[in-house]
Amino acid sequence: MKLACSYGEPWLGEAVFRDSAGNVIPAESRDAALCDEQALCPAEYSIENSTYFDEIYHARTAWEHLHGIWPYEISHPPLGKLILGLGIQLFGMTPFGWRFSGTLFGVLMLPVMYLLLKRLFGGSAVPALGTVVFAADFMHFAQTRIATIDTYGVFFILLMYYFLYIWLAEGRLWALALSGLSFGLGAASKWICIYAGAGLAVLWLLHWAERFAGEGRAAFPRFAKNAAFCLLFFVALPGLIYYLSYLPYGRAQGAPLFSRAYLGVVLDNQRYMFSYHSGLVATHPYSSKWYQWILDIRPILYYMESGAHGERIRVSAFVNPMLCWAGLLALFVLLYMAAFRRDKRAGFLLIGFLAQLLPWVFIDRLTFAYHYFPSAAFLVLALGYVFALMRDGRRNWLMYAGGFALACVLVFAMFYPELSAHPVNPGAADRFLRWLPTWPL
Image (tube, rainbow, N blue to C red; front, side, top):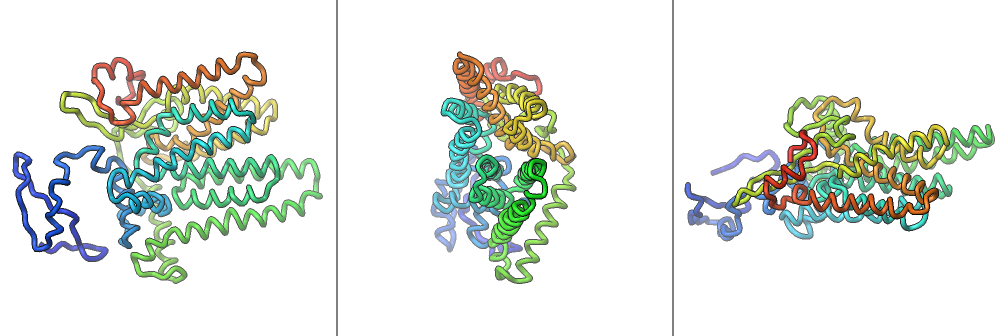
């Protein structure tokens, strides 16, 4: 049978035929490779052998980028799928291959979080406790194990704020340049990093507003030089990274890098992405809004099936309720300290959190709990701020802060089956894990 294909010659990886009972029907082909590994084809779909949720788009697109095929999913910039494709290149088009890069970046987030906490608050106890809380977050665990691109966005967001803080605190231009580089890599992975870039711009403007208030016109020459520096590293460099990330598109179209055809591909995709995200009209049983995220009201259920003996198998994504609810209280501490004590660290973290959340307040398209992932990272930083206040004001602070971190770990262990597709007794899950009636667990 001849199959039509919009991006080139069609092909099949392996052909398997089964009867009504599920038994393999022996098949032959003039192309021996088409039917030589039928035993490897799984009889049933599962999380261990197939894609789930948005993996069906991103893993396929990553593979297409590797093979010069016009991509199936074009609703996000390409770099996240290119990073995802590194795992496929190393380990093949397998679940381990397409999930490898996200898991690696999820692990790498932990030392970045530690370094950021250490820069902010010093010492080792507060950074270590904050990193433990982050490692025990449900969203961090579930989201970095699925082959989607949000992980890369959050990773680069943490990096861009880490480097910006070094510049704000120490005036190191190399750090400001690396913040711009991180912004460029993030924006070319997913547009959520543009929200973070807006937060960086606010912090930059506040910094120079303070300088002008203290120095007057004498600050202008340094401001002008720094503005030119930022145009290079926050506009020109990210623009180049973004443009180069479309190399797989150009390759698929046969368009040279610096050609009108290549530029047209890039611009057409920007128009498509904006139209797609601004005009998306859809429903989903596990969608949620921003005001539900901050209270952990509506998790998203990525995967569900029943085991051979009636066990419940789930993969859910939501913030560890210990982090979500305590972090929300910590935000009010930040607000008070920023507004009435003029604490710059509190303002820095509050602006970072709001830069990730506020855009979603004005977006009426379909949204999900995983859109809160970048904000959840700032909840960890907000709790780190509270831990630092406790350290500086209470003799037994480590007992309280350490107890909270331990509670986060214990709650994570309790919910582990619902985050990892580990079979669990449905009665026990309903009894112990359904803390809110709106949780689809």
